[in-house]
Amino acid sequence: TPPYLSDLLIPYQPVCIPSAPVFCYVRWHLAALAFFGFFVVYTLRVALSVALVEMIDSNVTSKQNGSIAACAPHSNSSPPLNGHVYNWTSDAQGWILGAFFYGYIVTQIPGGYLALRFGGKLLLGFGIMGTAVFTLLTPLSADLGYKHLIALRVLEGLGEGVTFPAMHAIWSKWAPPLERSRLISVSYAGAQFGTVVSLPLSGLICYYLAWPYVFYIFGVLGISWCILWFWLVSDTPEKHKTISDAERDYIISSLEGQNIVPWAAIWKSLPVWAIVVAHFCDNWTTYTLLTLLPTYMTEILQFDIKENGFLSALPYLGCLLFMIIAGLVADFMMEKLNFTTSVVRKIFTLIGMIGPAVFLVATGYIGCNGLLAVVFVTISTTLGGLSTSGELVKRDIWCSFIFYSLTKHTVTTLHSYSHNPKSWGGMWGAGVLGSWGGYGGAGVRGSWGGVRGSWGGVPVRIGWED
Image 1 (tube, rainbow, N blue to C red):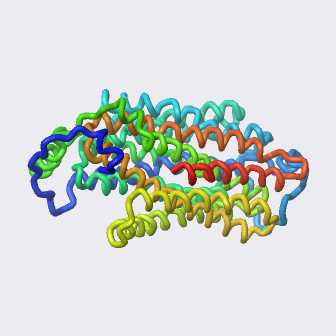
Image 2 (image 1 turned 60 degrees about the vertical axis):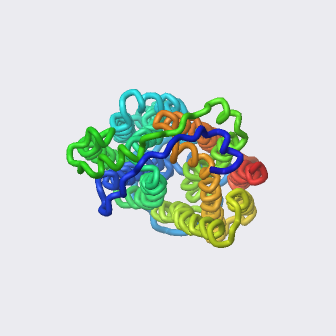
Image 3 (image 1 turned 90 degrees about the vertical axis):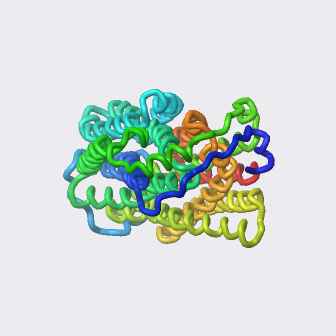
């Protein structure tokens, strides 16, 4: 336990924990299913970012921005127009992209309570099921008008807001302390993988079929996953029908003797609040880029929808790979080079926050050089993997008394409260900057330069607040 948090924990007598089973048992089947669950969660979340590009009448967008084309097109090919297009303003597009987070922030904290009250299985399953059904209704709501689509996206956010608290409630009953970090990491890796896959896949679907099929395909995928989830998963090892006695006894024994939590001391802890601030600043950039990057690729750099999807996914592929590498480097620095946890987390967070900001701001000054713009954005998001690893090292503080030693009630509740502020960054970033991107006296390039400056400016601060 880090020394400045050791006073937050009340020691308990260790229990005798049997040896872990050698083979991959039910808890790892649960981790694999959770991986695909969060894959589905992020495909449902980001599909609109690419599809919206094809949903908007490009002639209307050009007139609003005061220029026919910001940059020269990179391709002469164009997909057949098999879907409706809409005359929505840039302001309306910004509200559509940001609406998801208005629902997302509402259910996170209640989601922690509901997961403990009714079980994480039902809450997670119905949350994703609802989001999948609403995703299927996206083309219909778009035909009814952009306000209906905004309302639908809010409802989707309400459904997904409970997913992370519900998953923590499940792992608090299923994950032995010595395996918890690995089980949680496998589960949430599906989110990054879903982003990397869904962006290019959405572009291909729009190009070869039509944008409504993005929502139909991902919606059906989500419902199919929910059926498997309800069929195969139980809230606790005691309720599972096929788990072996050895695995059940091992999990139950390992979870005995949890720490008593001094809530007042936790909420007065500066490291706890530092992590909350880090969540907000990091996700201001992450969520805003996730929602607005496909629009930038098409409106400014003039990539077609097929290229757009692949190029928008590159930054997240780099981030995913760099997170893995950075985690290994962080462990090496602490174990072999004797760096302290505090030094490692500060180095990684500093580079991972300021580096992306520098490259994002620089992107605003390179004009129509599409290749360099893609390289800069990719480097920026890839370096963000360092920030994530730095935060994960910081969360060794957090996890040392949340994920590894506290009661299931504490894990779920604290995660709900810590996860909520990060969503405000996505709500404000996507909504405010999305509408801002369509204005500017010097045309869209100047306006989008201001957007990228705002993306970069917020995370710079957290690099020095560690």
